[in-house]
Length: 403
Image 1 (cartoon, helix red, strand yellow):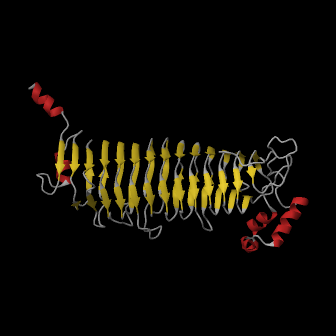
Image 2 (spheres, rainbow, N blue to C red):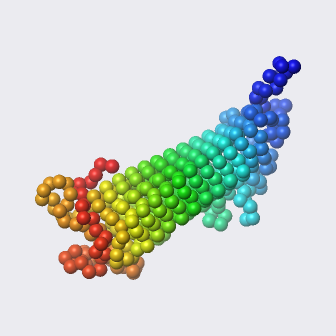
Image 3 (tube, rainbow, N blue to C red):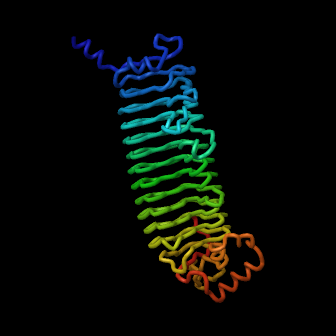
């Protein structure tokens, strides 16, 4: 009797394949018990919608394919301690009423999605009301059509303690989407060529975004209605368009933006309604506007950043600045350093008269780099009148800093 009990306690491995006694995943899910493993052999499996509620491990051998035939949601997970690894998901269905996904998690915990490939999906991975999800080393490639007909690559709602790591996502509405998500980390991902945002999150506090690349997305990255956000060591590149940004910050507070690179974006960093943000040790290079700070921002600190090759270093729509700039390097700075301490002896006003004119009249951009504009800026430096007097770096650095 004791021997029978012990044998029953050991986890079992169920092998699924077209030539095996168990030739379908649905049958394997019925047979499986908690802590069992299912090994899916190579092949194409068209089984309609699948559901996992047991604590099992599903592993693909040599990348088997689960095909949704453009009709079905492929895999729904609701449970705990479940792993999905090494499987190709393709052609999940589309619905204007339901958020069909290749993989959907609902009311789950301790879920790992790893080393999978997802193509032709509406939503690729859709996670809601879930704790401790790990989404790692997945490749997600969409077929972008329009915002209405395309879902997000990795979508989280009302979840916590998630880890989104080492994924490559492209061709969706938003690459990574967070809403009401807390205590989570996004790191080492590449999000590119998405219709709207490479990263989009709202109402999500206490999250870290580390060492990601957001490149060539329709509107860049948006961080909205959140607090206590750390964004460090990320690259924001090639986000071009009339409403495109490296990062758009709207109504966020008590956060940190550090050691990031903003390269060749229409606007590197746009702040609106933000407060108590520390922006330090970032590189702003070859952007249209390096930074836009709206008049609704206050108590933000910009320091130890490098500004080089930007058409405009700083833009604003107000005459008074409630933010601090200090110890930044500006390639347009023409001051001097008599005592050789590496800090300019003359303050630098990064907002040019021409940028103020463009803020009010965007069509004036056609005069960019004209001789008339150069005269206007020279005159403004000699007799300041239109640019914000309080938006000034009193301690500009003479040399570019090693960041």
